[in-house]
Image (cartoon, rainbow, N blue to C red; front, side):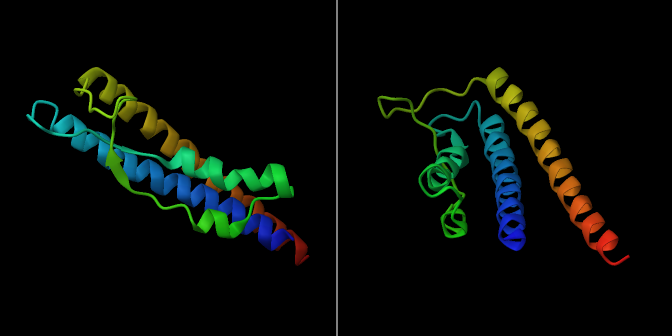
Length: 127
């Protein structure tokens, strides 16, 4: 039970960090190509996939580790509801870059804290 919970927690935090890293690349590419004619802005759709994996929590009372393993991170073209690309707004991209950086730092601290708790449990259990 604990191993499953620990594995799911670590997997989700790791995926979220990977998504933030990939999102950082996408935002950087968007900023670099802000004035490039024909450039299609890039984004990462991690949260929607994670929500799909989380549906098992409501129906089964737990998150399926296989559903988490099925989350595939990739950059994709950002389109509006009509299926067209919008021009890049540099101020919006810079704000997204700042938000993503803070999110990555919080995830790293959370993962570090998670491992510290596990280490404490293992070392105190040996006494």
